[in-house]
Picture 1 (cartoon, helix red, strand yellow):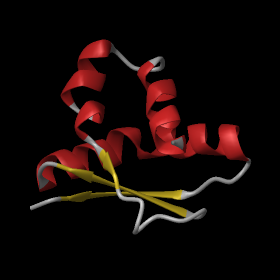
Picture 2 (cartoon, rainbow, N blue to C red; picture 1 turned 30 degrees about the horizontal axis):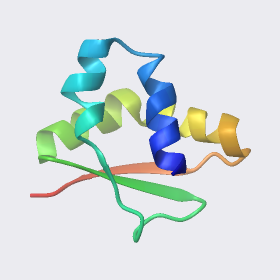
Picture 3 (cartoon, rainbow, N blue to C red; picture 1 turned 120 degrees about the vertical axis):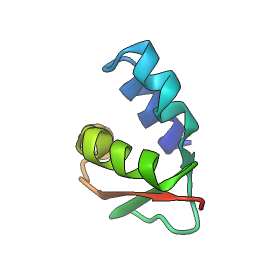
Length: 79
């Protein structure tokens, strides 16, 4: 799945600790996503905001490199 590939690429760009603490907990929301918006869910609102602030641009850039389309990245919380 493309979302998994992108997160694996991100893993090579950030520290293992950051990846394990934050990115590993993201779940791809296939139903809410399309070519121009990619939606992930995080376990809580605080983590969703942190990941959105710190990593959304990096994730969007990796999608653009891989697909040629720079989507909007949306991180929401499950709670």
